[in-house]
Image 1 (cartoon, rainbow, N blue to C red):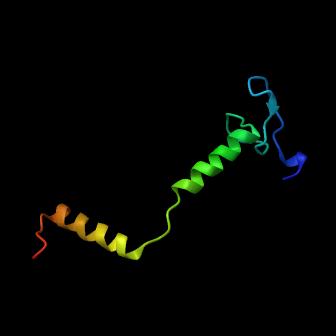
Image 2: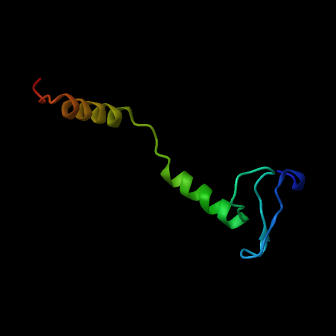
Length: 71
């Protein structure tokens, strides 16, 4: 991202300039805030586990349709 691609609005409380692109929705974000957001997003992402999905689907169907494991 070049300087022309950044919003650049001055944020007095953060004492820095916004690093988001022009025309973004508020609020403006500092470089530190953007880095923290990326870390939180990466921590939430979980690897895909087909066995876990199958277990969840089976449990969901049992509850949803009032079935028993023997059904």
